[in-house]
Image (cartoon, rainbow, N blue to C red; front, side):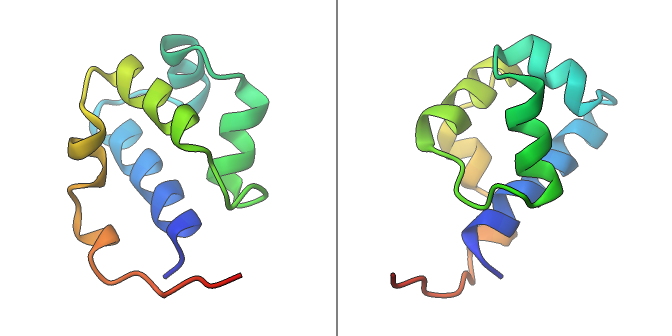
Length: 80
C-alpha cells in the first residue's frame, strides 16, 4: 500500500469512528472541502504534512496518533 492510500484510509476510518462526514471534518479542521475530497477520493495521493497536521488539530489528536495505525507499518517504498 502507498502512503497516499494509507492516509486516505486513515482519514475515512477516523471519520467513521467519530460519525462525521468528510465535509464536517473540513469545517472542523479548516482544510477546504475540495482538498479533503481529493485526498479521500484518491485524486491527491500526496497530502502534505501541514494538511495532515491541520486534520489532526481539528480532530484533537496528535500526528503520532494519526500515524500509529497498522496501515502505516508495511508501506511500499516510494522512490521518485
